[in-house]
Image (cartoon, rainbow, N blue to C red):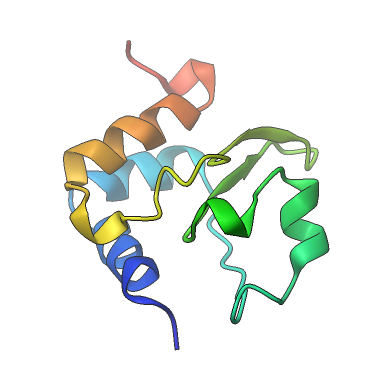
Length: 101
């Protein structure tokens, strides 16, 4: 029962531009925030503020340390973002050895 922007982001993550990026450097895990009342402690630990907007993304390294997060609602209007815009954001999160700048 996800919001429209969360569903749109999920669809965008299946786009042919995003699939290779996500498969190259990420293991995706989804977290249901309900009506912005579930898993609040986890989100806050990752510097995600539900008030800034959801969906949100936290990128952790192999040790579980936070590498990056959408802390300013960058994906809150996911249904209006093009696959290129999302791919540009995801590219910045790739481990350095996988990035082609």
